[in-house]
Length: 240
Image 1 (cartoon, one colour):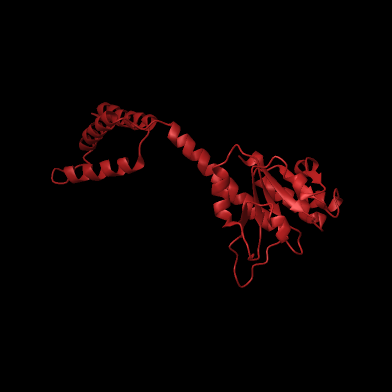
Image 2 (spheres, one colour):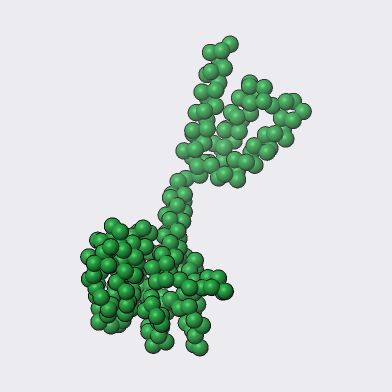
């Protein structure tokens, strides 16, 4: 997913901001940097501010127009700090991450304007969506690299949540009969170690069942739990 996202900077005036953007991208796992008519690039200041993200700078594409930068993109999101008269669909930074996570195989771009004026209305017309970072309304000044960092962070978090969900879905949950056998095994062991008391045993077991049901125990996990109970039984037998 992240490898299919371009970060596009338009007419960046300070090369240090390009380097800081490369650093922000690499820390979040992005590598496609596209520059549209940068004032100074390459430049030693960009390399200095990249702080080890030189590979992102070296692979950066320099274009003469926004149209050229967006060739092949299936979706384009433009950043905007100002309200527009005819805005496209407006997203916040978290919604951007979730939207991109739903399109892991499609090529897209997040577009940032110049430090002084941001994106022009004409440039925003190239975008399918606009993103507005929900900053403090009293003081909402973000430098370019900080804005890039926030958007990249949200995309990375959504990407990681997607991977975790896929992994969780892949692991089969324990079958009902296996859980029933586990509960029976658990109750027997708890009696052996004098944890359960006659007048509380039924209520205690109900609470424990609720706990494990909420956890959505996977097949591999219930096998581990049964193994632990068997080890406890073996220890008890050796001690008698």
